[in-house]
Image (cartoon, rainbow, N blue to C red):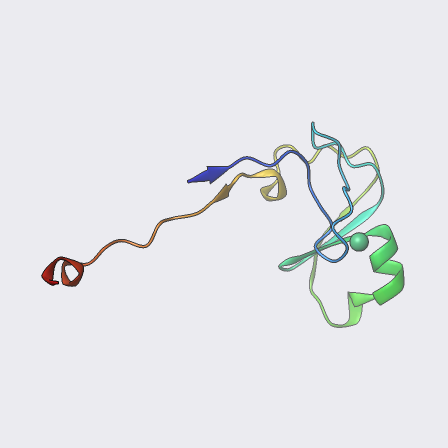
Length: 85
Ligand SMILES: [Zn+2]
């Protein structure tokens, strides 16, 4: 199943950091596995603990980045064991 994204959200506070064309509306910080909006970056200052992948500036186009990719959920395959009931 594929769930396209409407926009990109801060992983900490869920604030929308892009509009629906994936243009950033503020400076953001993309760390490994975590995306911080400007507010959360200032509040939690994760730089010392997390690996910075990319600094995102306001008005950056993120539509081609991994952040904008749809969420793909792969169903768990049934095994033959399920048919033995
Ligand atoms: Zn945030």
